[in-house]
Length: 204
Image (cartoon, rainbow, N blue to C red; front, side, top):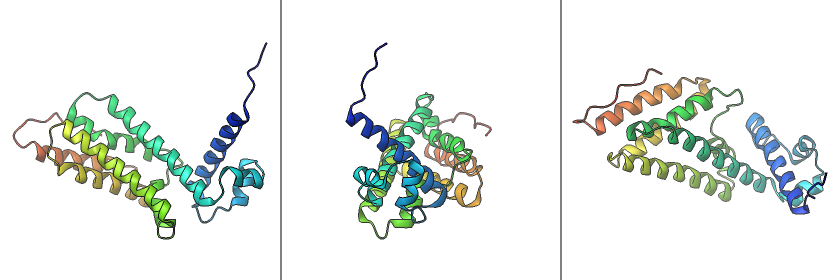
């Protein structure tokens, strides 16, 4: 049997991904400020020299974690949306995604909101990453709303419901926040189509 050699670049990428995975878990569980680079080194099982060669600063590591979280959000939401054909139900898909996410044992709230609260005031780079993610989420909702033929005002209101649900679920430990936000979103969608019958509301 022959084995394919792993290139140094491939090894470095694997180690970098591993470090990001560990950092994401620790930041989520303890917060960014409470986790030191020494603790990250020990948890990831890499030398401090190797850790700093991959991520020269904690800010660089936080940026990498947020990039991972962004990809997870986009992939997760798109997966739910792709299962729905009805344009109006597609506008509600984000709340179905939230409902499943809130039930995960490791859910501690939105990583972007939490990160901005911790370091947004002192790190313009991190603040910019957070704002870019939230703007991207807003733009995605705007596209879905436009595809459904709904008025422009609906997208920012749905976005506010989504953001509020994430914060409420994290602080109050209330996964039902997703269902409440979804019900409110259904009401807004009905208001956007006052003269057109809407599908029966789902019992969630």
